[in-house]
Length: 89
Image (cartoon, rainbow, N blue to C red; front, side, top):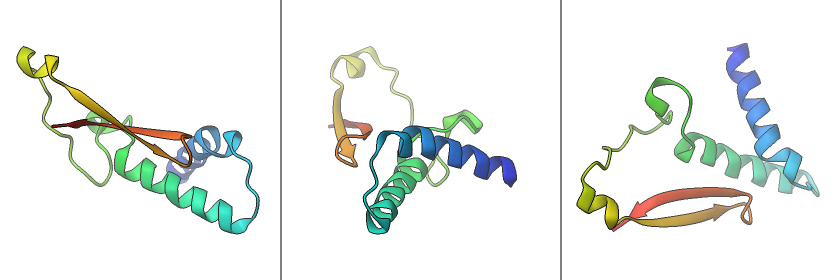
């Protein structure tokens, strides 16, 4: 358990806290909740097949016709500090 928490703290510090000015504890809690949601819901992990902890991997897109019609939508979190990408129809 120690190594899991050390990895989470390191990632949180590198991706969030080293790039952000925190003004008060309310701002800190908001930033940490946003990062936690990003970390658990969207960000791929180095574990089993890059699976996110709370959701299975989507089916891979392999058809050449489908690849040429991809539309990628970007969603910014924390005023653009974190970016999330997904395919749109």
